[in-house]
Image (cartoon, rainbow, N blue to C red; front, side, top):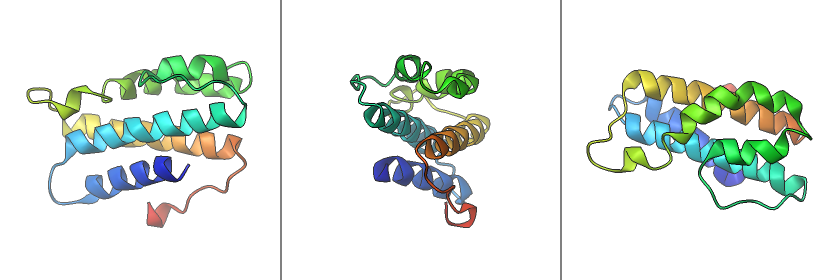
Length: 125
């Protein structure tokens, strides 16, 4: 959970900065979502697959947490940023970074709620 939260907070800080670190914002949002989903799997004692495809992590969670189905579109979107932004010629836009941060926040909030954790303080993210 700590690593998931660190990734989200890093993305939020980079997004607020004066320099355009769109690739890094998108990458950290994907990583945060991946780690939060894996935390849910661990909590349910479900084997955690070594994958960056968020849809594959979501599928075994749905019988236990059907409300996560609402995140499917965002998880598919975030999966695009697991690898591509780390390589030349695969740049992301400011708009993609803003969307990634929104979806990352939704995944974060949903997973924290399902894990019985207090919502994070917004002024510290």
